[in-house]
Length: 421
Ligand code: ADP
Image (cartoon, rainbow, N blue to C red; front, side, top):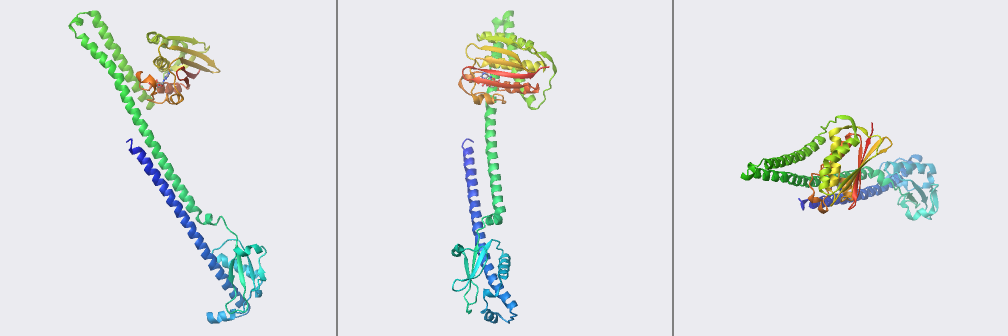
């Protein structure tokens, strides 16, 4: 999988580049073809002009002929002098139009001595080198008259003709690139998910193995001849089994709760709660753990209005998880402080610690399910990476917000904002 992934990215990138290259060369070919076609149209248009001059000349002079030879014979007398400026303009316009040439143009008709016979108003002498020269009198004519047609470049011409082809190619190329991007992104997400899954399985086995081992040892001890008659020891070991059992239950409950949140099956039993009371209760429960680590927990509950609408169990869990993390992710002796204060109509609860802290990337991701920072000695600390995602889901279910500020090596501050009653 590790090697297949970059290979797929390289192969798809190559094919996308190939497709773009082929499309560009197709479009270039199409543009060239269109230009060639345009040149042919112009040539056709000019022939038409000559023929239309002759036809007009014949009509004006009442000439009729049986075949092409006799026609050409009569045409030797044709000169642009015999047509009016208006007639010439009309003929050129019509002929070009019929030949599908729509460029703006100017023209001049000159005799053999380069004297102007007829010309359009806009014609300038500097156009002459770039104008198309066509003899309009016949081979056997005594006059030698040339039509010089100057076409103004129509930059939008190709775009008008091939606009939809170019737009469609750009559109489909974008579609291919977007689909490619989506595929790569999905592959990355899948990869991340599979890493998270194996991390989770590792964590779970680790978390359940320890209590199971302790229970197994306690049972061995209980069946020991010396212990079996000692009531105090039996009490001690069965207490141990009960404790470990409780711990395992808690872990399983955590996982089930995450699944319930996922299925949005959590219903809150809202009632008016005294935040300070709950914080004190949770703090009491954790007192032993803090003492074990030679830490200290200070409460600075100064908010004047501490009544909120909340679910007692979930709200206690929120505070418990934050304090539990503050203890878990600390070095030797944790200094933890819980503070409450008012901010307008909202109640702020701050949980501060002097623990290991987190970098910015970790701070951005800690509320994701299963996320655990993978640095330093955090590996030694057990957990599923579910605690904070639960906290966030629950705070939001109580219409609150949670944010974190942290400095690596210094500590972290989690701030919950809740609406008061
Ligand atoms: P768990 O503790 O089970 O890993 P959490 O969701 O509670 O899961 O926490 C997610 C991650 O956030 C932890 O693995 C840890 O890296 C980081 N973390 C949480 N709280 C703190 C804290 N107070 N100080 C430093 N890091 C923390």
